[in-house]
View 1 (cartoon, rainbow, N blue to C red):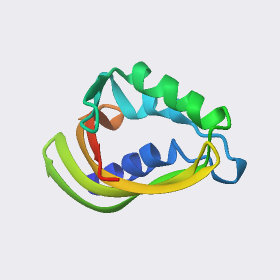
View 2 (cartoon, rainbow, N blue to C red; view 1 turned 180 degrees about the vertical axis):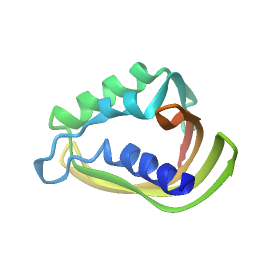
View 3 (cartoon, rainbow, N blue to C red; view 1 turned 90 degrees about the vertical axis):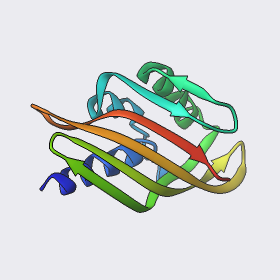
Length: 132
């Protein structure tokens, strides 16, 4: 059951950025999926460490101000290891959208660290690297 719950949290994370078909992206839902004080790290091309709010606010703006439309990202493969109340997921993903009127596609790798809380599995930390 734990793996299914982790799959659901991961899918909800990816879905938070989806604004295809005029749907409103719900990046703020990440606050529910992560632990307070969770850390998000972008490793390339410029290394950046974000608090949850530092990560959410500019993405919410980008996905709602009309600059980035028809955007989605999705996991294409993953490995999840669970040990008691901790889990680690390593996954490949793809993304596509239209940024400033120009269609684009890309992908990368995300690693997500989970902990089981009294409310269920939550993200403690996430790091990613865009390949393209």
